[in-house]
Structure formats: structure tokens, C-alpha cells
Length: 115
Length: 116
Image 1 (cartoon, rainbow over the protein chains, first blue to last red):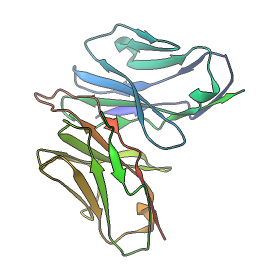
Image 2 (tube, each protein chain N blue to C red):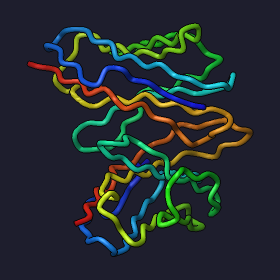
Image 3 (spheres, rainbow over the protein chains, first blue to last red):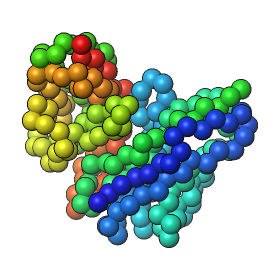
Image 4 (cartoon, each protein chain N blue to C red):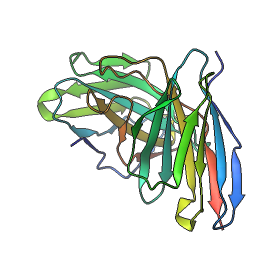
């Protein structure tokens, strides 16, 4: 069965600190897709990144970076030099060949950046 | 391109009533999925429509239904509302998917339904 675990429910950091959000996933498929979304207070889920299971290359986009490790079934997300605008709930999601467009979401990590 | 739009944004209903929510996908996207978000259950998949056909369905009672029109716009309907149906209902669209490949889903702002 597919499952996504985000063990960190809430995180608070002071502005300019680095913060890592953890995501652990479970799937029996060898081909799967991982996503991170950001949900600000307005409610809309904003797409951040997509990773295919066959591409383990880590990625950096500005202050954001993602560490995908198949060996530990983890897809962690790091924000460098956090800013107040980063305050939001962050969701990790999984889909695979069996589920197609049915995404399985983690429970989310609420990040508060204190000025 | 315009993003996914959902109407209405807020809705208040009473128990026993029914409600219809609307979603317009990103232009060119043919797949529309619906999710329910509640504090207790998190984000849960309701169903997905592609080319006017329901392609996948989550574990929700039959009171939850949907449809998709030829222009890819989608509606979801909840009949005989219960207090527990109070939630944020999110619609997501993606482009054509084949052979089990998954495309990125782009979400709308949601409809916040309150059942009194």
C-alpha cells in the first residue's frame, strides 16, 4: 500500500535559519513519483517540485533544495535562510503506476518562520 | 495560462441539503481530480475524471459524486449533507496521462464548505 509519513507536525524557526522538512514514503512499485506542495493560509496547494523514482539527482532551486534517497525511502526538503513568507503548511505526496493521478499525501508540516 | 478556478469559494449549508461545486481546469488539461481536506483526515482523494469518464475513485460514500463535461470542466455533488462533510474541497487538473505515468497536478484555491 502507498503511504507518506511526515513525522514533523509543526516546526518553528527564526528567520534566516535553515530548516529541513522530512518525508518518508512507502510503495511497492518500482516506478513512482514524489511531489512537494506548499499550502499558505489562503488554502491553495502550490506545486514546488516533482521527482521520478528513476531520477535520484538532488535538486536546488534558489533557497530550496531536495534530497531524494531511494535507499531510505526519503524525499526531504530544505529551505535555506528561511523567510517569513516561507510560513505555510508543506505537504509531501506520492503516486505510482497503480494509482496514477490519485495522490497520497502526508499529513503536512506546519512551518512558522519567526521574524 | 490561467490557473485552476473553483466556484464558489465559500459555501454554508445545513444538514440534509445538497451542494454542487464547480471546477475549471487549466486550459488544455483533460484530467480533473477532487480532494477533501479536513483537520482530522488530512487530504483525501475523492475521484478523478478524464474525458468525461470517472477513472478512479477514493473511499467515500455514494453521496459524493461528480461529472466532467466535454470542455473538461468538472462538478462534484454532495447529497444529504452531514456535519462531517465540512471541509475544504480542492480540485486539481493535469494534462493527459497514459501508460500509468503520472503528471503533475495543479490545484485550485478550493471551496470551503461549512455544514450547520
